[in-house]
Length: 149
Image (cartoon, rainbow, N blue to C red; front, side, top):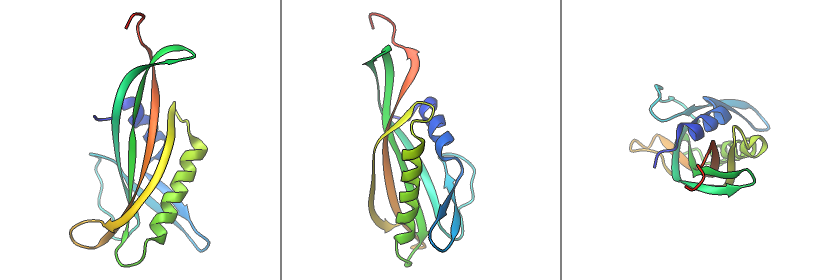
């Protein structure tokens, strides 16, 4: 299931088009490439491909009555040049995780869990190395569930 515009817009408001990552020695602007948006693949890393999916949209009971709750995942695939280790990618994903924890909820989007997976070859040419972070989320639609639904 594709995420709704409500969830997608909240995620975009949180993450934007780029992320400023820093370590003890330098800072780097990391472009975020969103689905079906025009972009030019960076020639040198790092960069992040964003994917977002909704899992479920169902009524739940809250203190304000029944609302529609959507759940899903944001996948952040961090690409860095191959054969240079994965410390930079892991540091960038850790910093994005910290940003999410500090700024959530934003526009009612709430993160519930995050994990970083194993690294792997990023694509067929062998130019990129990829490590991915998955962020589980939910958002409540302010449009209430009609009585008797």
